[in-house]
Length: 287
Image (tube, rainbow, N blue to C red; front, side, top):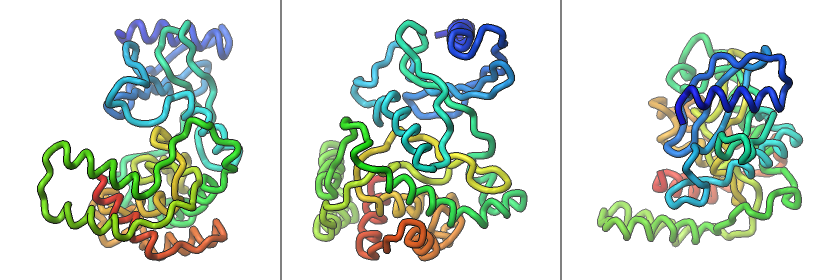
């Protein structure tokens, strides 16, 4: 779809959904994944973000990661009701709109690029609040009632997740001793599968909108699923998501101990150290 066609179809959608008197302005492609697109735009004085699967692709196509966009929108709305700082879903695309699968959200303001946030004096106030805010956001996500969640959300036990990664590793002919040892260690130390809660799946710097006062939105819900809450905490602490600030295990802004303490206070549940270590090693290997 050309930019001109997108502008025309998005204008028609906005007039139908938000009223006929507004003007569509500032349509701009945002950074995104290999399959999904995000576009910012303004209509009638409000700022929005369009999250869409491009025309010609299906959410069932092989190789596309994540849950369908309609499910993402459902989860975001549930999260907002539960007190999570997520953008408000303002509209859902239909086939007749000609824009592909997707939904439209209120645009959250702030910065997502970690190298512009971490260690930047302009964000010193925000960075000082991130440990507490991340803990509270994750606690709110994990406490969303299971009976309110879409039945389509997948669940894999820790051992099933390990085997999925091992199968992929074997398919590409992996023969690295350290990886072989890591897979063996994970199998030997996999926790039980009794904890089944909503997990964000990609909660990290880069997917958090930060303004000068702190966290302004939790973004990118495409990997949301049923799982172990500790996985979200460990994922935030993997080396890949410290963005050069390796001495600060939690997202490049604080220690893991401080994050886990804040989470225990926010959720009322202590985090088992062995379970956290398992998910930290799993997440590092997975990435």
